[in-house]
Image 1 (cartoon, rainbow over the protein chains, first blue to last red):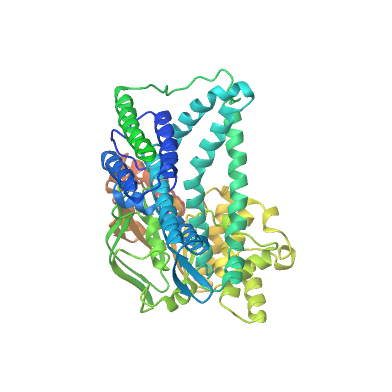
Image 2: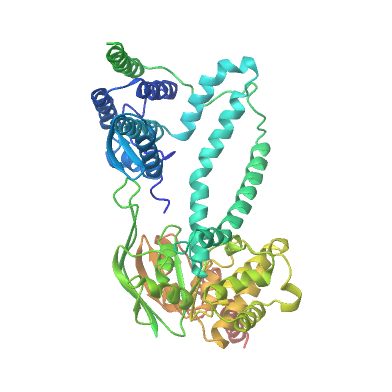
Amino acid sequence: MFKNLTIGQHYPVESPVHNLDPRLKIIITFIFIVSLFLIDSFATYLLVVAFLAVAISISKVPIKFVIKGLRPILMIIAITFIINMLMTPGKVLVTIGFIKITEEGLRQAGFMAIRLALLIMGTSLLTLTTSPIILTDGIESLLNPFKRFGLPAHELAMMMTIALRFIPTLMEETEKIMKAQKSRGADFESGNIVSRAKNLVPLLVPLFISAFRRADELAMAMEARCYRGGENRTRMRQLKISKGDYAAAGVFAVYFAAIIVIKIW
Amino acid sequence: MSIKAENIKYIYSDGTPFRTVALEDVNLEINEGDFLGIIGHTGSGKSTLIQLLNGLEKPSEGKIAVDGTVVGEDKKMLSKIRQTVGLVFQYPEYQLFEETVAKDVAFGPLNLKLSNDEIDKRVRESLELVGFNYNKIKDASPFDLSGGQKRRVAIAGVLAMKPNYLVLDEPTAGLDPAGRNELFAQIKKLHERANVTVILISHSMEDIAKLVNRVVVLSKGKIHMEGSPKEIYAQAEELEKIGLGVPQVAQIVNELRKRGFEIKNDIITVEEAKEEIMREVRRRHV
């Protein structure tokens, strides 16, 4: 059940993409998302697909993994597609009862679906090639300038690190408790929505209790090692921009420039 | 009546870089009335093996039959298999969720859709089996109990399903010596009086020596040795090679024998050792 979840799951191999500076990767991902929303022709999306394909192949992450990340949001894509298809006014193509499908609607729906799919694939490439800890290091470093305005950058990053760190742990725990309750005859897979929700109680209660217990233990362990936030903290891993980062930034700049040129043209 | 495992192979995360073979070429027969011990180094596949026994996981290759029913063949039989093979996980107290102890123990029987009278009867029986006074404990919140008590409530929750086979994964991990002895006494009683077949995973060579009549040694996903505790512990060097050992008392007796004591070489419990040493001491003083 949980084996399909790729969001936040690091795929540990050595590759040029893995070795990029996390700050650069985050910025690139952001601009990549922006670029997706700038595009207004299907042909341009081919450029995005090509860019993504090259990035994925350099990253040595099997394409299967990137596509698997789409599975949890398949429903959202489908719903967005249908709503866009039905709600956009324009030249009517098909009429079934009160439902009208318009040419503009179909176009819009196609755009939205492709956008969402590419967006998820692009962002999962970020999390697949960057370990959560390095990722939050990058986020913290990017947020540092906002400290001046009272933004607790270190605390936010630490919270994120901990949250990410505990996703697999909690999933493991969920699976364990699920198995224990299944051994007592619990059924998580059949029944209607109401009975299914009810059946989750034997899973959720122990899960919450253990999450609180873990939080407590972690806080204690951190205090025992004199943790006291961001002030004057040095770090083991210093982020440094390398040659590879310049190259990646260059390639991405060319990609983004191309998108903008096509847009203005 | 028995559990039969034939040529079991189990692979985790096949097709990813996390792929690991957890079990390979495992053939095992557990007969009714057995008290089987499974020992092995951490990561040797013990926990995976027991999850295959009640159909929580499916073997990648091979098959397991519980009393003649092949596990996983018919999904409708799964609940029957899970009732027949009761599985108590490590730290089972983390599965408690109800407001009262009685309600929590009733969860299993309730899922079996038994009558209310039968459920009440089973809850009372199983709580008493693990050494509780039913009337005193039934309305307590499971979260107010001590660690050892919680564990016994959780075990009662599995016993209430009336399994023919009871599988326990390190049931005494984290308990103090008193709690451990008490729990083992209860498991032993269950095996002898209620005629439950017990499969026990333990890291304690002493407990295995004291309790079980057959031992399976797992190493790197394969059955490395199989036999009576005496047969197994006679091969101290072999056990040490795979990161296990023999009961401490067996080590002491071996040392004594090396220094000229005439003592039998298959001693694995403190009781036996005491007898033998006393006999030898008496012989020397005559």
